[in-house]
Image (cartoon, rainbow, N blue to C red):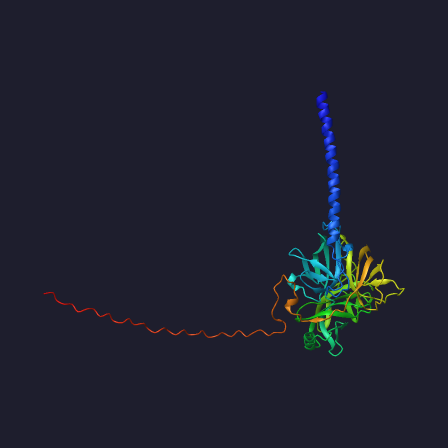
Length: 395
C-alpha cells in the first residue's frame, strides 16, 4: 500500500512538472512568433513608386495573433498589381476573394489600375489578404458637358476633373469622348463634391446608371447629390441630408429613374473590422483648428502632415473608435494620381492573362470566308516497261 501511494504521488509530481514545462514552452513560442511577425512587417519605403511617400504596412493593421481575426477596412485607389497595391499596401488575393462591382458579382479580371476599391483584409503571417473587394464607381452615366481643354466634364449633375498630366495616350482617348457618351468614373470627392477622376471607362448605352456621394439636400420626395435631384423610390425611405447615398437605375426619356436609393454610414466594413486605411482628399489645410472630418468620418489622434493643403490626397491609418470615428495612428500624403483612360490589359493583375488589344476601340474584323486553296493533282507516275529477255528455245 505504501509503495503504491508513493508511486501515485510521484505521478502527480511528474504531471505538474510537465504542465509547468508546457506553459513555459508555449510562452516562449508566442514570444518568438510575435517577434518574427514584427520583423516581417514592411518598413517604410520612400521609393516604392506606389504614389505614397514613406508608407509601409503599419503594425496597426496587423493582428499579432496572425489568425485572421480582426479585419482591416481599406478604401483607396488601385495603383498596381502583382499583389493588389492600394494605399501603399500589398494586398494578397486568391480564388476565395469575393469581388463585386457596385454590388454586382464579377471576377478578378474586372480589376484595373485607377479603380477605387473598398474591401476587408485579414492578416496572416505578417501579410494582408483580401477577403472581400468591391469596385466602387463615383458615377456612371451620360456625359452632359465636356471641355477637353480644361480636362473637365459633367456626368449626372456631378462635376468631374481629370489629371492627364501630359500622357499622350490618355489625352488621345479623352479626345474621343463627347456629350451623350456613357462613362464610368472612378475617383474620390473633394469636400466641395468635385470628383477627381483616377480612371474613366466608356460603356454601352444599355448598362445601369448609378452614383454615390453625400446628400447635399433632402425633401419628403427627393434627395440631391451635387446638381442631381433624385426622386424617391416608392416604399423606400429617403436618406437624410449629410448621409452617404448610393442610387442606381436607368435613363428613361433623358431622365434618371432610380430603382435603388439607399443611405449608409461612413464606415460599413462589418463588426469584425477593427483597423482602417482610408484614402481621401484633405478637407482643410494642416494647422487649421477645425475638426478633421473625411467623408463623414471624424478623425482624431494624428495631425495632417506639415504643408498639407486643402484637397491634397492623404491616407488615414488607424483604429475604428465608433460607427463614424477613427483614432488615427498615421496620416500620410500621396503624390498626384494620373487619370487613366482606356488602359490596356497589361494593367491587370499579373495572374491574369492580359488583353493585347483595346477591345472597346478596335472594330471587329469582318467574317469573310476565304476560298480554299486548290491543291494541284500530282502528275501520274509512269513506271518504265521492264524488258524481259527473249526466250531461247532449248535444242
